Length: 264
Ligand SMILES: NC(=O)C1=CN([C@@H]2O[C@H](COP(=O)(O)OP(=O)(O)OC[C@H]3O[C@@H](n4cnc5c(N)ncnc54)[C@H](O)[C@@H]3O)[C@@H](O)[C@H]2O)C=CC1
Ligand SMILES: CC/C=C\CC(=O)/C=C/C=C\C=C\C=C\[C@@H](O)[C@@H](O)C/C=C\CCC(=O)O
Image: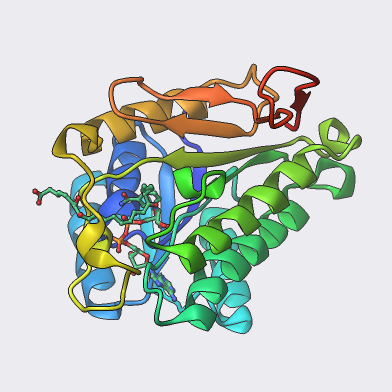
């Protein structure tokens, strides 16, 4: 897919992975509407990026994605500012095991709701133009991770939702593609818990430095995934040194050899 002129809705764009993807998309000639919780930071980033890419290339609105009404108004505003949305990236997320309801609300419910808003807007069978819906999940979307069980549950929820919609036999008629970006660890603010309790057994959790994924590798892999329209696969895994790849899940018997079932 040529990204020039594509219209993108992105949640959680003011820092970390979201910001890096937004800057890369703008450099490719896309137009981006982003939201995040922090109003001041978002506004100043919008001004900085408008200086660099033009005033009609990037728009910001403060939004708490866990508030259904705010998210709908924000998505509607994106459609009104951009004309339409081709690519929806549900990226906003938090990691704090002490805040179960917030974690489920931001990581799971808001990404699901964002996907539903985008699907309603994009569906060709209801007058839309088609598009792609990308949920930024995590390796924890399909792996158990004992340090962050609530976070892991929230990511499993989005993976289940996204892969289920992608199976809909009428999806080609709807003209919508679905992706779950399942990335390992990238060095952003999120992976540096500052308070005891944000992770379970925090003292035992160390990701070897060599396994961390460079932001530049994350961005390159993400763009490769976006350009690739050939795959029906939903899960796009980004691990250190792989450049990113589409993957399927299999369930095998406990003996490890017989009757493997492909899930996706
Ligand atoms: N950094 C990593 O190693 C990994 C991150 N991820 C996922 O990537 C996504 C982005 O994470 P990072 O950039 O690392 O984190 P970050 O903490 O740097 O950025 C999170 C973004 O989400 C936004 N956000 C949080 N709560 C919000 C709310 N209620 N309403 C609106 N915006 C809200 C923040 O404003 C911020 O822009 C998250 O979904 C995270 O779970 C997945 C796997 C690994
Ligand atoms: C197994 C993790 C899978 C997916 C990533 C994800 O979604 C969530 C990760 C959450 C937390 C990671 C925390 C890591 C914390 C630390 O122990 C360090 O290993 C971070 C290490 C180095 C950062 C670079 C540095 O400052 O030296």
